[in-house]
Image 1 (cartoon, rainbow, N blue to C red):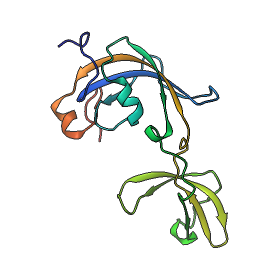
Image 2: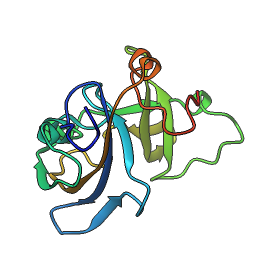
Image 3: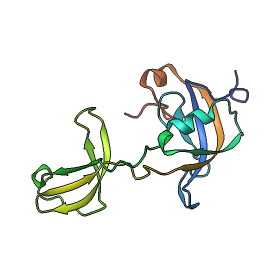
Amino acid sequence: MSGDTLKIADNLVVGLDYTLRLEDNEVIDFSDEGDPLEYLHGHGQIIPGLERELVGMGIGDTKKVAVAPTDGYGEYDDDAFELVPHDAFPEDMELEPGMELHMRDSSSGHVIQAFVAEIKPEGVVIDMNHPLAGETLYFEVKVASLRQATTEELAHGHAHGPEGHHH
């Protein structure tokens, strides 16, 4: 099948032009013109609510998609805070509220994004909510390209782009 007749389905590499807005219409992310986001469909590389809505679209198709928090970055969790002792951080690290950190989740082993919520005498309060947790996400998307994934991309579970493998 040529790229012109392909429709978005699992194991295809999708090039997606997009704009992401929040409820107040603030644009918080977008793809640069001529540089679409490339991902391997069906491999969990984009949020589930958006991935599900793209199935069946073809090159040039456009769509507006509202993604609820449960299908996006999750609901805001008041319990997703942890007090971490000061000595768990490098001595020369200057921590301040709002600072982004990357921490390893002890149960899954995955690296997660976290933020310094507060600095207390007994430790640092870390917020492990995604910055967009609790937000409904409003996407405007246009399918820029579609192609079959290579054997290597399928084995690795992600798109490699025009220059090939980079990890």
